[in-house]
Length: 168
Image (tube, rainbow, N blue to C red; front, side):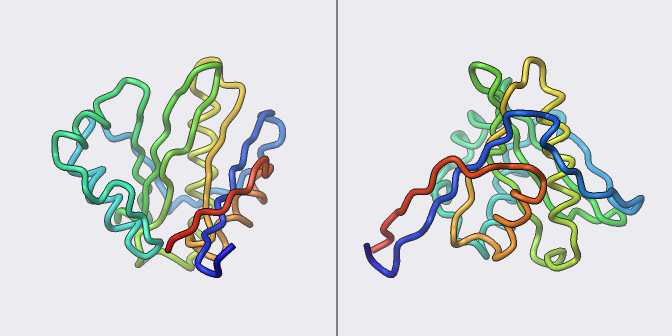
């Protein structure tokens, strides 16, 4: 395995009782993006993901983004700190009661303020509110923020698989 290999961590929460929420702040609000807005998702993906080497969707054009966000199984949520857009998450309802946190992150100006745990708390609460949810899951990687994996585990997620992706 190369030193350039990226570790991909797959995490899940199979029991709502395992959830350990972070205390919310009155200065933090979350709103559903409704109607879906492809250009907003694209902008958030770029703005949040640029620091963490998110590249899988950089080549998508407007029609691909529209197709992605207009699916009934996807919802996008924006987190606001004191009225300013601070981050976002996408939830995808899947088969057999699975809800995946597809993308999750903070905008650069809001990193280091303790908001990741608050935003993740809301994401998990929203995922468990989806009808018939039996499992909330996500993946993160060694390119993501150094506290990302710790945040997920602190909220009650458990690691179920680790993979290595060679980036050469």
